[in-house]
Image (tube, rainbow over all chains, first blue to last red; front, side, top):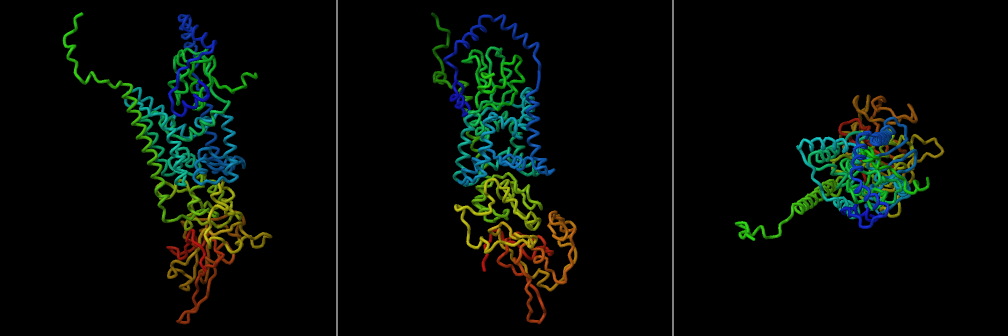
Length: 320
Length: 286
């Protein structure tokens, strides 16, 4: 799968099986088939010695809480480090503007003033360097809440009290287009009304609002009906940052030679379609970068017993 | 080869191409997705209806573009809310019937008294929804523009006494002259808005930079003139003396052209409901 195919998968297409394999990949796939007993023995060995860690999850939660509380305390304690909320802010005086909010305002207002441009460009460069959708898992406050409620959902699923209803992943692309069109036509940032990211971020800084009820409705919907529905199928912010992530050098990389194809990563992943490559016989190359829809949350890295997934900076590993 | 009995009599329905379970699941998924799209967009539009149909207007922070342009350009970050020293600016909530997260001022509860001196909310705005100088594309109604730069009474002795504000937010109006203490020729003594009022103001004789609660600054006036004395702008309102037909002296607050519509008079007016109010987004009519 090339970079272009990975973008298509992000927009909603089903991941295609590779037809062309590199000789190295072919060799590894072959080895795993031939030495099946050895392979199984190694798999058991890796399982026995697996260290269950939450290293990346804990780091990520710490960063997420730190960033969001920095907003809160900048206002409450008047330390003026990070003023504003997630839609737009100033970090020690430098404008930062959320890309999706900026897009909505630009389309609705049809004029771009200098500060808006500077803030948007800064944030674009920042997230292009840091992985695009890493915004979702490392900063967005709704992501954290949804993660906690997801645990509840999974417990209820295990008890067969609820079941997960999937939606078509292309819905998010449709939403992105619809909300852009609505902003353009109505001259109002329609999406901001229902954006749990904006609602939560404002609530964290300026105090509770009735709009939090909407966030609760979303969470209940996700627990009772569809796992992580907002982040998976709706949120246009995720897609906007995903497009930025398509050009980002920071991503998760899959290493075929370390993988036992047990699929633990697929179970924890918010966007399992990006991990299609881990299915036995799918990887077209020895090392495969995970697509732009990946939020770089690191849950798969934590859960993998054999270190087949790791953070990678494109180009840097070749230099070192 | 012998056929098992009953094989010839396969029901017709089974001969039709059956829809596979997978296909059926896909169809359901598609329908679910269509319903999801409809409801989410529908809900978002529900939030837009009051915005589109707003006949009533809100008092926006100083320097706001005309309502339509303001609504389209506000990014709802709340930086204007943060910089205001008297916390006059609040976010609209769902159910208020205006845009969610859009800032507004409730002058009666807490008016903008320009205690920041520089109209910092405008400075803080990252998208130009609040602006010192209207860009060429944004229309400005006649009568919104101030005839000359407003002089801030607090800065009157400074080398640069004017406020960086080119347009008014509205105009004050004596809405209930019958309730006005000055009109009735009455005095006023005590806390302007009672002991429970949380509004704050900057008093130059107390502290140049730190606004204090209005309730901590009681007044004593032979003829109530709070709207005139507490007005932060020079020559924006005056108390006019009239002699009635019965020969009794009476007074009346008269709003002048320099009024920027900040709303301090509405906040400080000691009678309930306020005798003087600010009509937001109203132009000056001589």
